[in-house]
Amino acid sequence: MNKGKHNRTITRVTAILSVMLVALLVVICYAIPLGHDDTRKPGSQVQRVEVRGGSAGLNALYRFKDVNDTQIVAAQQFGIVPLSTRAGVDSIASQLIKIESSRAFRVDSLTHSVPYLTPSASDLLNTIATRFQAKLQAQGLAQYQFIVTSMLRTSDDVRRLRRVNRNAVRNSCHMYGTTFDIAYNCFEKIDSVPDFEGADATHRVLLNTLGETLKELRDDGRCYVKFERGQPCYHITTRQ
Image 1 (tube, rainbow, N blue to C red):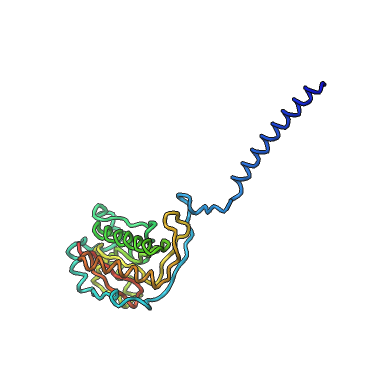
Image 2: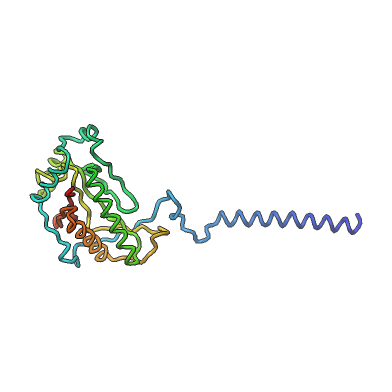
């Protein structure tokens, strides 16, 4: 083999090896995480961190006192005819909206209610969530979900609840699909949401931000609100 042909052979081998090396590096780069948080990918499960607390530090303006006798009037005016059992929900499905967890709020594991509300109550819940999130973002805070702990109850649900909760009333606003409860003792931070990066919030800040949101809507005549002490929640009924 002459010298020129030998050099050309070496050049070709070197080029092939270079291509193989580049390909190997590309594979390695995609195979090994480089600090990227996969929870940011659409459809992936996000990481949640609970922020717990009581009602200490809550502004007195947000300890609303719209009792059941007040809320029941609106519930009966704008709600459905109470159902005896959950089997009846399907028969009036067109009158109700099924409520599911979203990035703005989480639906708790319901034991004495089902996740349905009237359209106006559903709209109120989503408005509360939207304004709550906007207020957090305006304060430079990360995204936190509030938790919905109760919605539509049938007469049977109320009877079962009264066996374990002496504070439960027989003529519950929840039977009309106009009413839902939002916990104030626990919020959940959603980590790694790209469009909602921000600082951590204390429970006190989250509680008062929720209270401020509810006060605005209550003052606008959109809802009645009761600050519950026995059960750590806001009891809310739409007025539309």
